[in-house]
Length: 245
Image (cartoon, rainbow, N blue to C red; front, side, top):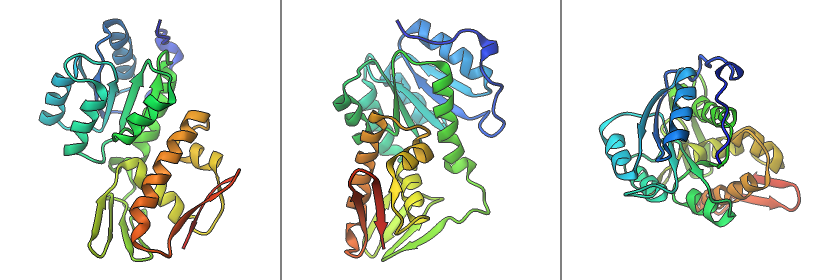
């Protein structure tokens, strides 16, 4: 049975930074979706709910959203396929999977398909809200206009605001999580960064499965940066990583 907190007065007041964000929530469990939607709306989020993947995609294509929460096991179209379809139209919107599957292979599969994070059922409303706020604080809609947004890295120009990484004939539009991670490395280039520091700074917490997620994203960055042979994301065994420039 899914664990969630139905006592509304135990959840912190809405965060003024992230309230009014528009969230697409696709979940076919009637009880869970009712309670989750009710609590998220109390936080000030604008929730659009769908009970299957096909109608969820139709909603995504017809409206504007700041974040997607997708159950994996959905009728009509499963959550992984839905995420793939969403990524064809928008590579930057954060996607959070809700899954009853605890196998790390399933979670990594979701990340490789374009997901940014996941929660395993049963989950708490408080944990879901925390992850949503972490995403929205770092998303493009909440990036302070005075913050640096253009970085030069070897042959690459990295436009953080627009999630664009370019080098000569290479051009890649990153996901928000990829952009956050690359920015974190660039601002600390040539420094050894502990895994725990990266996870807590980018994912908001440090645990084993998130560590595996980090490895997936590191592999992506290495692939994107291979155009410049002088750049290397080095694995410091037992410690973490270093971006050598």
